[in-house]
Length: 499
Ligand code: CS2
Image (cartoon, rainbow, N blue to C red):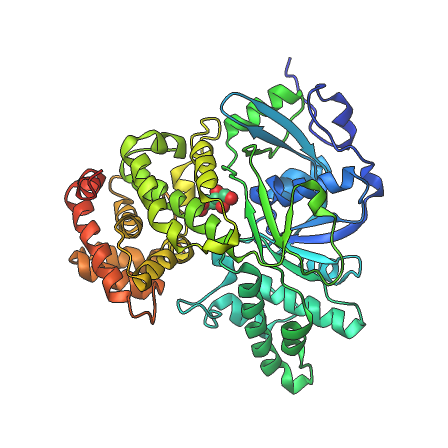
């Protein structure tokens, strides 16, 4: 007889095994307070877990409306489960299962942009958080808004039916202003440098274009409002969240005794450092381990340059060395030594007077990268290198050059990215990882130009070090590594570094 197992939902919470943590509050009494754009696994392992703890402590006014800007998959998985999902917190020896209840409802923007605008315009919504990934901010190679992007053009022409985060935020803030509803705080949680300020600048740029194109209708002034009256605190978010696999789903269902269509895997470590600048209130996050500060900058730089920079190095050099996961790559003695070298170059670029403890931080990172229970795929981190390397690697390299300090490891990450892109369809599977610049990158790499010309063209395409006096030096340093990688892979590149 075929046995069908029931699925996770409010009705089955009481059936879960005793060791599973479940929402310790009445979900029916939670009121909406946050709209989150980009409700992927990262949000569900990080911000939603912090909010869940606030709710358990009685702060029930911050329920989350989760919005997917593209795909219906998360909504399709979680709606039948009343928004519940399992967070599996995994370390090499142990696993803790926690059911999170802070997501009240889910919307899919392309299906119903009007419903998303209604949620954003609802006066109960006081914070809008975002994890939409680097590429969804639609920055042009020079750093400003990519005004030629088809979705930006679309959103300027169709303000009531937006597709982009910029379009949704600008229209919602316009409607709130017209209705006399105070603006929400916009809390960016993506891995961008000065992420709040960056989004503030891009959205103001978008709104100015929108004001221009709507001026005939007399509907102007939103750019000024956004520039001067909306709070955009920056925040540094950190938790490693590998993509869920079918094996994870089967294992979690076995442990819970009910099916969960989309459990989220993560590590025990988590960190959230937030600039304390909220215009319409916020949960008492500091009671739950969030660090509220006046300036997030030093924490962001430390995380982007030491964690994410090393991650990108491990991903590209790991892929070129045949390692499918971070823990395996990091267990490779050459890659391990490479990461130490990378950290030694990046650490002096961080502010000395900000109280950062880089020794403890890197020791913790080494432990986190060694977590064998995560099976964090190198190919997952390899995605979108053109969007990630500027803040993870190029920024440190430029500062080293400006300070006159020598470096070799930083530029090897850039060369390894180029080599890994070129290896797709050859030694790596065709679409093993992707990048928004793939069409142009592939066309360029197919030409097999000499290393120097290749690196120059890639820097042009991606806008790396654009307008910096040190650009040419960076290109030359990167090209030396690319020559080695092309000739004999990471072995020769490492040998040239004395690794
Ligand atoms: C990773 C990050 O995929 C990547 O590029 O470097 O997602 C990383 O795992 C998180 O930033 C950790 O907080």
